[in-house]
Amino acid sequence: PVAVEEEPDVEKVEDEKALDKDQTEEKADEQEPVAVEEEQAVEKVEDEEALDKDRTEEKADEQEPVAVEEEQAVEKVEDEEEDEEALEEGRRSRANRRES
Image (cartoon, rainbow, N blue to C red; front, side, top):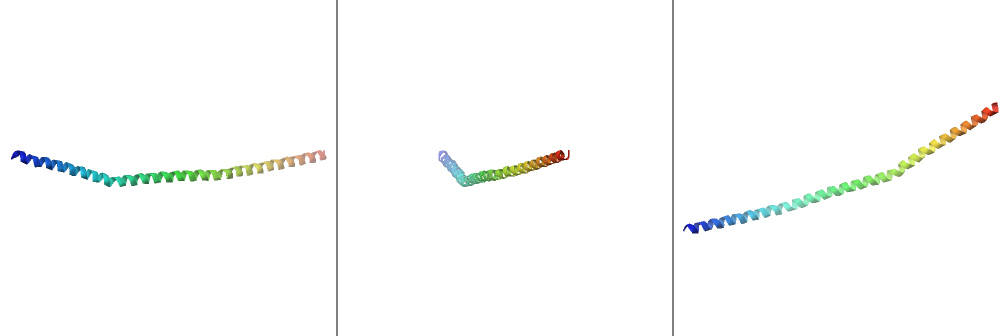
């Protein structure tokens, strides 16, 4: 009779192990979509960051010609001022020669 009583305990332990295994698998299955969602969220953030970087680079590329144009405009004004000064100096020089 003792041996018969031990047998159900072994079955009970095996049943509990199987139940634990099933519960563990169920938890893993429940968590899997969460992991996928988290991965997708990370990918979305990375995509948005890459897009922001691209937009920033595009803006910089668009502004670069403007900066070059502004620099050229400043140089042109400076050149014109220098030319005007040289003309004025030449006039004074001629005027001085006439007076002498």
